Every structure is written in C-alpha cells, then in structure tokens.
Image (cartoon, rainbow, N blue to C red; front, side, top):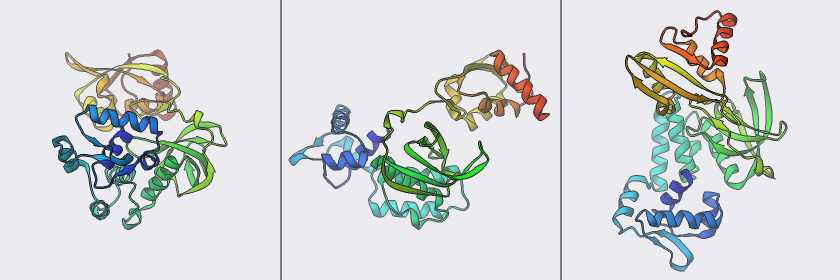
Length: 298
C-alpha cells in the first residue's frame, strides 16, 4: 500500500517519469509498476503514457483532489521538515512525521532539523532498502544481549510507525527487528543484499512482538479502564475486542507472552485472564519473580 501511495504521489506532480525511474524510486519491477498503474486507472484516475513517460492527467477531478491532498513540492516538503524541527523535545509522532515524509518523497533535507540522528538513520536505511544494499548499524544498543556492537544487516522493511526496521542479520542468519532509536549511525555498504529469499516479515501482534507464527490466542475480560488503555497504547488490538454485558471481551493472537504480559501486569483488577493455561502460568511466574501483583486470573 505504501509503495502504491508513493507512486500516486509521484505521478500527481509536475514531472513525467520514465518506467526505469518509477522502478528505481519505488523499488519494484516493471511488472509490478504496470499492475499498480492499472489499479490507479481502475480507481478512476487517468494516466498519461505519452512517449513512454508517465504522470496523471490533472484536469481529471479525482487527480485534482489527490494533488491537493497529497502532493508537496520540494520547497513545501522542506518547510514541513523545518516546522517539525521546531517542535520541542522528541516524540513518536514527531519522528513518524519526519520518517514518513522522507520515505514518501525521498527528500534529502533531514540535516536541517534538530535531533536529526533518527531521521538520518531512516533516510539511510530507506536508501539501502531501495538499492538492495547491506548496511552496518553502528554501535547498536541491544537490550536482549546487553551489548553495544556494530551489526551488519540487510534492511528490507520499516515498521508502520518508523520506530524500527526489519533486517536480515548476516551473523545470526535470521530476520530481526532493530529499533531506530538504538542505532548510533547507519553506514550503507557497496555490498548487495544477497539473502532476499529470507527477507520475510514474521507475524507481528498488536503488542509489537514478533515470531514466525502466532504463539497462542489470549482470552480475557477487560473493564472500561483497561479497554481505554489498550486502545490508547495498542490501537491495532481494537479488532479483537467486543463489548459484552458489563465488560469487554478480548480474544487476540499473540507472538509472545511478554508484550501482552506487560500490559496485563500493569492492570491488577482490570483485566481478567481466561486463557490459555500457558499465559496464566506465565503471569504467575512473573508475579513470583518480580513481586508484582498481576491481573486477576481465573
């Protein structure tokens, strides 16, 4: 969806693009680009294909609306970056805005905004993904191994909020999620990413935990307080909630018990866990080890 949106935004500008440019900017094959162009036309837009160069016909009402809503010139994009930079402090929303602008427009103005380390990392990683190159994540601070080391990886997909990036780890020979904020700098290498058959996104649950497949389906009853907090902290959980008499029923697949476990442990009395038995035992062990009172357990 992101690449289709990017293609729409490119075509809604004043430039006309050759197929090779569209393939390079969108990091997709000509076959995929042609399929996207057909989707765009089926949605009611008119694509001008004169002399094998492409853009939208802007006198079409749909294209006019799209152009007003989505397209920014490079000058406008620069102003947006500067405006984001004026916001005090650092926040996930601020970082997401800068990251998405950079990803969609491929605009190299990241150095103009304060606290630029994370934005520069997003830019470099985005370039590596488009060019299918390896990178070195310099001085990566890993909580799992409690180390600070350089990691040679093949990046292939950002998380939806640009807080992290999925990469194939060359040393461990497995795809992992790396947090952008824990990367000191990104060095793009000349070496090509040669393990693309392993660039596969794992199952990621609403609590941002990942695994090759879902570990289990957790069932619980939530009070209104727990319901509100769950939606505020983990909005993707909404589709797994259902209002019933006196409470909210949660039935949600999870990749790991740690993500939902942290949420449950923080709400004693507001989240009644129904199952599975493995998650109930997990919470009991956490209570013993951490001395924290977990949510009520059936």
